[in-house]
Image (cartoon, rainbow, N blue to C red):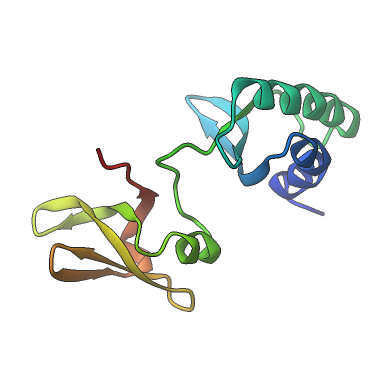
Length: 153
């Protein structure tokens, strides 16, 4: 049996393509006691509210018909955002050299957050390396809570 996120991605694919968008991620998470099915989109030039509304309406009908989720949940369709999380190896490869923020589970030298440019990603081990000034820092997969793009002004 397919995971809810995989089934949702398949159901949403035609509507997403029709809107000229691509699917960045699908999350099915419990937050504050309620379940959320969240689709994050990407589009050249940016995702707008009309894209989200169109895809949400079409997907809502398809989910009602397929009924893959027991119980209630909230469907959210939105932009992946400028400071999106990097999760898959392809995400890291696409954004090599870009400004990122690495958040750790535990303090390292009194800090849990490190900002720099994404220098390397090892798909085999999940090790992430960033350059901070002239230094390179590497973090093991087990230590990294989140890596996201960082917008610089």
